[in-house]
Image 1 (tube, each protein chain N blue to C red):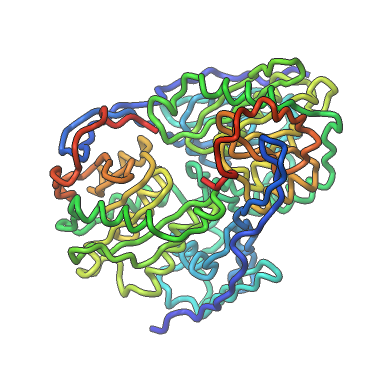
Image 2 (image 1 turned 30 degrees about the horizontal axis):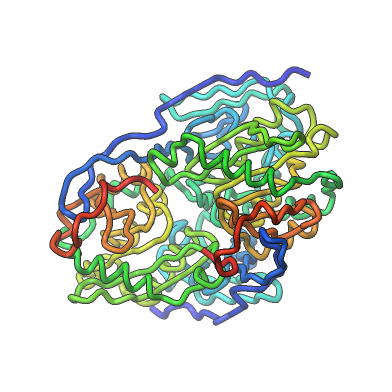
Length: 292
Length: 292
């Protein structure tokens, strides 16, 4: 089945504005863009997403996937984004069945709600089987965090965006497959979901057992559920986890690691997937991890 | 007109879990709760909010307000929250007119989307007139940031939550009227909107000209629009601003201040509302503000 045709719409990700600082001085700072992108499916208006705009076609594809509106990428003929009018036109081959019903139930998810079909999501969680042998080593975790640290980013130049990345840890050195920034972290993970549909034949194929999802944002239930649904059995966050995120991770055996900066981290769930190498942690100069 | 009756449902805001740290040691950490709260209006299911659960009744009231589903608090007879079933039952006096139509258009707002009726929101922005003479001094700004810094919070004990606060700066010392934490910053600002409806006769009354909204989160378009709609002419963030947040703030003459920690800040818009006192900023030991 052919993959959808995607345009490559691009727009500036930052802009410079004049500000006044605490000394009363004028200065210029960069801030991230935030754009409205209205999604039309077969000419029917579906939703408006507020986004940085880095990879709008993959965002729309991943949104449709994570909202369970399309079953597979090949159901879609094309996604055409036009920033001049702030619109994404999705053309399907055979329409979306029961679209009214599928979009009727609204849930405002934590921090970054998308009006996800959350009830449905939770039902599906029980069906998820993550690859049992997928794991990462402490050394791979450190290498992965360091890769993010060295990345040139919109965050470094303008702040106020979240980053997500997808890593392949099947080899000894983690390989970054995709890096995405967006003003909303749900958008960043949806973009990764879209990329996976375009670039990986199946989420649960044997070859994908070594996937790690990285996010600068918190591991709320929504983030953990989406990761699990994409078949990614390990998530790493610079931030922490919520109680429901923790419960879901435990239920599906997903390894959730948080507070990951430099050589520090805590493993919240499925510690059997993390092969500890405490000798890499360096000297113990600190008190036990405090929340940040 | 009588104000709605609100229950006082409470539930634990944090829980302790076992984690493994980078030395392979087991330790206990606190994490914030995240609960599903399904809102029923006159027995009709409206939405499910994912929340920390600190002040669910005010959250629901503010959600209905900010979504423009009710015109005034006195349209509501009662809001009854029962955490045992994760439900908030809203009883109105006369029903909500055109509720189907009002909830039909979904927008996923940046970072913290609520499926807000964003198109409608932007139309309304043009109507907003903020009190012209409202302002704060640099000294008040510092006092306000320091008040937040000293607060005992769920964030300090468990991390992973956003905080919002509402300050009255009509006097020389800022007075904190309300402090709210939630797993989503949109929930925190909605809770403040609910509180204002219960405790302030009118948002644009002369007495409220000295209101400042504080948030730990980014100033996206949604946050700036909601602040303006509540008649709050000044916002302060520990984080930065997005391009659309900046555009809206400039359009309505709202003073947006970001990167506010210790004695540092940048003023993004309406600097005439910020009375500078650069002599309070301390010695210049740093390079110009870099994005964080």
